[in-house]
Length: 335
Image 1 (spheres, rainbow, N blue to C red):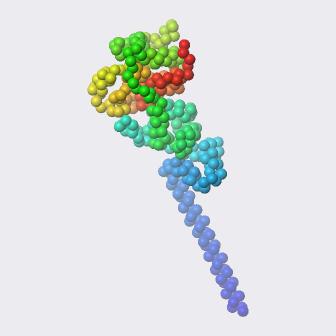
Image 2: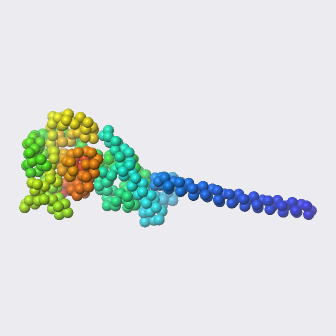
């Protein structure tokens, strides 16, 4: 009997030792592996997108925790949401200058040249490197049916480009002679421009003059004005560089610039309508080099147009800061 009792006690002690050993290994080995994995992800800057996708995938369908997670990701006031947007902001700082993409057969790098248009689309004044910008982007992504990561990646940028391009002129029919008027030389960047190249579609010209009058009344732009409050002859900003172009003249321009590509001189140009205006916003008037566009998108006049041109019925061609198209729908009453 004593031998049986001794055997039972030894067995129990062995079992306790085994359980203790397994528990120790699980707590130290597996827990350390998880910590190491998280540190590795953070060190390589992969957290913003990966974290959001993981958290959206974890809850089961129909589970109320899924909605809670989504709301938390879109609300930076919470500690977890703020952490997500801080990581997204760090990722945006990198992608702003390094994201590789293509448009019109031309390779592009980063989206920093389009920051004013992006901020206007997101309705935010937050710097692109901040959590506020990432939060606004996340809200826009959700309405656009995209993953609300707060990271401006290639998929998000292409959706924005699609929105900008979709707001441009739809009807590119050639303007009839009776639809055009001859604008005065004082409205043009180059006052020696011949009459054939100073024609503008009538409604477009009226909207342009209303828009320029509003800009002239904004003292923050510091525009040089006449006593009547119009742009002075020596003022270059907001003057028309190019308006109506005939198909023959456009073909001549293409022959002079054979390497302009699809993102440059169009075969079926909106300038044929008389409703497209190239407007001086700084730098070299119509130079598409990134270095020149970087200058143009920083000028006060360009940023004013981004914020206000749609009130007068004008929409931008995002790739060319100087190019604006009149689509109508002005929210400013005719005077």
